[in-house]
Length: 259
Image 1: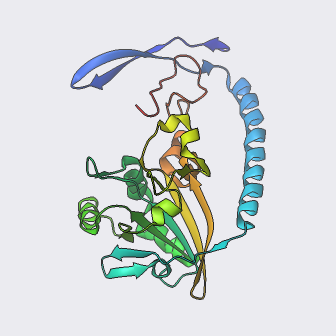
Image 2 (image 1 turned 90 degrees about the vertical axis):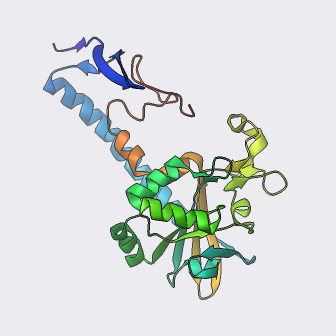
Image 3 (image 1 turned 120 degrees about the vertical axis):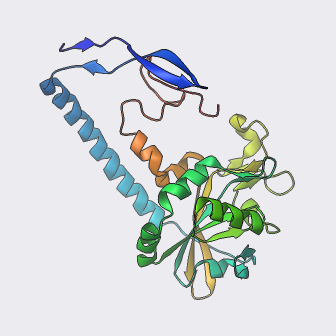
């Protein structure tokens, strides 16, 4: 079978209660020796990417910062708190701008998956040991946030930003008259947004020095994948994320990214 491209594999897929048969292509089948040559070639590229990522991380650490002059007040389980309070006494703060859609009254499935996977006590303790607090902030009523936490069993810090300009100032929410920018550009210039208004994927990082708070970093769209665990797992597999933007061979399973 060495050097042959295997034919499509028939698999059964359950769809809306019915079984459907679909052809799924397979990678080329080769000998272990041939596979090892290709794997070592890829390893060289992986190491180069790792080195480039280290260099990029170093540049991120060397970014200048901006002092926060505006007073942001959030609602939490213990009442009104300031941005300074979200640090919980630590020097660093990573804010997950947790997407919320008030029309259907639901939180973003992707944000929720990330919280289910990552925001566990052991991870939070490790972050705390590195002087970092992780907190979620959403433009949702506190009562709705608390309900979601009970249903999901979440116990990480989660605050309501309703009534503040926080999400707009940090480009996490697009809204006419409040914010028209996303990922450091005018949202009108991003055709894929199609005049969308509402929450978008975003993470923001802050540093505290005494009682002064500074903004050091924000990332958007695919930049947030750095901490999306499930994507990192999928990227190691033959079929990847199975989204239509990926450069995959013909016959690989794919679905519309925003479908």
